[in-house]
Image (cartoon, rainbow, N blue to C red; front, side):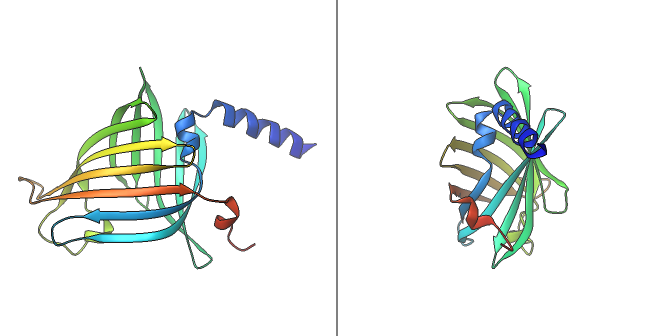
Length: 183
């Protein structure tokens, strides 16, 4: 009996979740590519599971990396409808600290937003030529996955950009069993 009630409540929950949020959840093969003069970075074929929880009209998506049978908490994003087709995205690092937030209008299964002063990503921890990122992000959602395209301006805390980086992260939906650990 409990399992029937659980399944019904899960179905009702899924029906209420906006489609673009549903498209962000599940098991994905992920390719990360970042290009900048002298500093290219790529991870291809990573596996990531994205789990959804909802509380107080905030949809939280926890990204969990899957590597050699182990799970690693990666990052979390919170989504909130702020009205008139606009959504707020807040991105948190693995330790829970806010990395950046932005607001954009959802149009044609796509959201574009910008934020300034985001901390350096872990891949650039040892770099000394810049301190923060000014980010322009476009997310394109489909039932088969999603793309995150970025243009990041790298600059000192008080100063003009010293570099421009283009990022392309592709999430391709794969079978859920590929993200099951310990089974």
